[in-house]
Image (cartoon, rainbow, N blue to C red):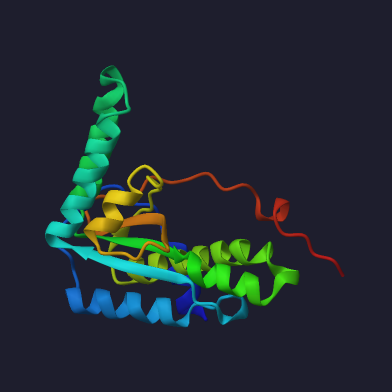
Length: 198
């Protein structure tokens, strides 16, 4: 249990990423596969899907994002956006998180009394999957952050990675070499968030 708690504590948002990773690509892929397989979901729906984008595909994801944002962000404000996107492209790879809406819709039809809950449960399961992958990658010594440029980039990214039409893009997770430690963050007192009822 101590190892799990330590891993959760070291999971941080790291924007300063590089390509010289401390572990093998195979180890990264195996770790992601394990986390995706083991994370629970309501009704065991397993609607969460993942694409591990490496090399040229990783680079292309951030080219798509840059081009998409360049078309909508005013030029006077684009320098900050450009710098952010370059930092994500500088990472080793990107984990793309999807949800297969066909699975969610099918379960909603099978269990109409819970129909409104299935999309919520799917998002909860996807969040757990993101947290598990993030924590596991950090435990391997990788820097990680998570981004949400969907739905702006959805169509092009799905075409790039050959994702089925029913897959909805949820998040993008760049990962790579840690170039600098994340800055400290403020935490509210845990007593304000956890209530003990005797």
